[in-house]
Length: 605
Image (cartoon, rainbow, N blue to C red; front, side, top):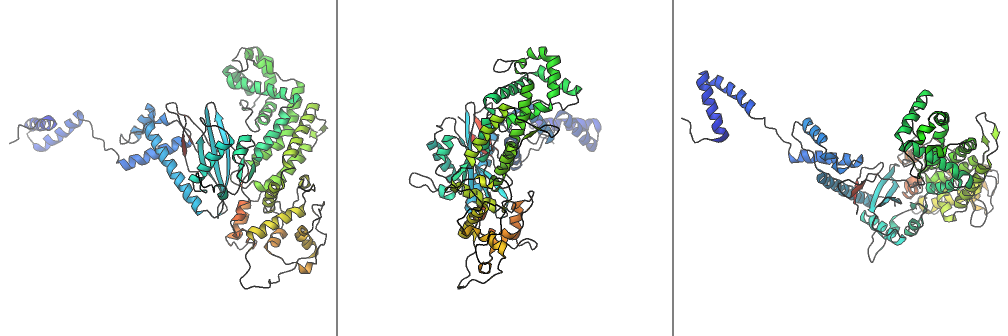
């Protein structure tokens, strides 16, 4: 007999069963009918995920949010939450922005611990590069760490992203906060009594801003080559007869980027002319190669702009105005403007190619500074040729502006301190593509004594570095060096010319005999120098890696046995390494570095 005290849902179930049994007269049919009825009146129970699985998906979403620069509040979007609930049959509930923030902080902490652990195991001193990024009331100091791994792979990590909005941008503050950040990841010690950070860093690289130079003056390093070239390019763009054309180009770009009417009209014209339907790229004072890229767009769309001027000018002038109060018609380009733009592209193109190369993060760039700079100047010195390959005199404004740019390049690079020049030269000589110095412009560099840089001096510096840092130790108890194959007259002169103080003006000369060839002992450095130069497309990291790993078909060199060799091949260019973001609901930002698995959040304000 059933207990009548059963109540609630259980009582309802018992009562339903008794009623159905009485109506069906069989217990089996009663159970089946009761189950169907219960399913209709009671929702199905959903099995939720265990906390560990939920937390794992929270972490994955947090990583996606940071990597793709999404706002933390995106997971509070109703449609996204509904989609996640549907995909998991209701077993998972999306996190809110606070949970996302907690996971980003956790990921950051793990990444920083991993970075500190990695630094503790490094067999080289890493290089650092840095820059201050600012927009509106947001300012961040980003510091990157670079080194070449034992497997000869470029490693680039975000060392720190430091909020600077409420801090002085003085050199002293930059130095203090940079050293605190370096010490936090195991690069030296920094406190009130001890400062060993500079001894843990091989080289540094920053832009030429006075506060950054002052703040990083304690580190051994140099200015960013890419920044320096762009500063020289400003000499061209700010020249009196060029600046007006630059302003017109930016006015045209602003019109099409701000006005929907203008963009729609432009697309119609581009469609008629069967041109790609594009808008002009942004061009600002701080955007590298921005004017060059804008001018290229203008030339490609010259016919479209001329049709636009003829048919749509009145409509364009009624569209949304530019921030400076001008309209499209105020920036129309005349024939002289077009001449300056076409010739200006020719002048700026070598600088763009140079900075594009210097921004590489997967290959060494230091070794290319000397060769590429010589090529850059040679290309800028070339006469201008029209579409028919006929030489055409430069417009007087372009000619004067080009001369100002070249003068600034020579002043910045070809008279650099000899200690810095030596770093670039040693890296160049360790690059199997450039060690023969068969490129233009080597003698454009001036040494401390007023003489010109030559191949002889380059070989001398490289050998000195090899003997100081990478030369294999002498075998124990060996008092007399084992004779090795002597070199011929020409090679002896080439390899031993560094012993002479005379400057050899002939870069390719290898016939001057300065020692008795029979007295020359060939060592690893000689073996390396005797090899033919590699093709420009050669991956030098792979080239150096193979002999270190004992690949039989590779030159039997062991120059890389000492880790310090890898340091001279490091990168020299600073580019924006992170994607900053401020959430709408909180003053919060983070950085996701290029080529790195770490996410580094910073509290802003």
